[in-house]
Image (cartoon, rainbow, N blue to C red; front, side, top):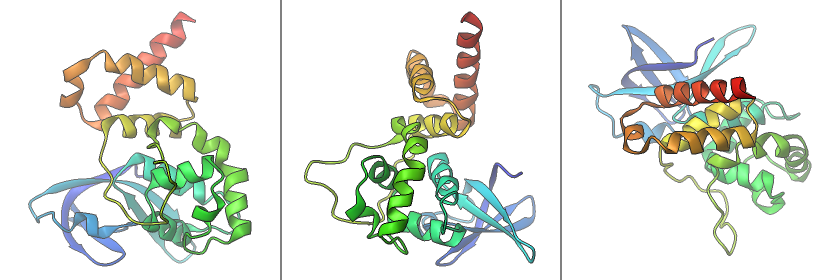
Length: 214
């Protein structure tokens, strides 16, 4: 219903931020609200949102990257994982680390995430491995020597990562995503002038043209 919100940050605490959008204050729960602590009241920020509707309340969850929101939604499809647990998982490690651990069936890493026991970790691997594989272009390589365990790292807001995550969330296959990114790379320096939405729109146009040729 609400794809994203763009506005001024007016408040934050340990679990949420308040964004002023056109004079309306939206409370948005985030995995790491502290990442916005350096923003001033004059800064306009954008968060990708997920609206969770319950009988007694509607809750907004917000993410700095599309990849993070995509993984949040995928986590909630697994039995036993609701929005609060999914947020705790994303607060403990980066979306790229979690997705890589699922793809590589890294049980030791997954079982160190909050609330994730062996059975839940196994369900994550079985139920999500194919889904996160489609988002492989957004994953960072795992350094040799393995991981040291869940830790929150500041994520680089990469245009490539967000476009790839957006395409994956729309159901495009890995090969199609790679083709779109390869095609976009030919635009060179022009890409630096585009917003994520503009780059994603351009990628969709390129994919549509490719589909018409087939």
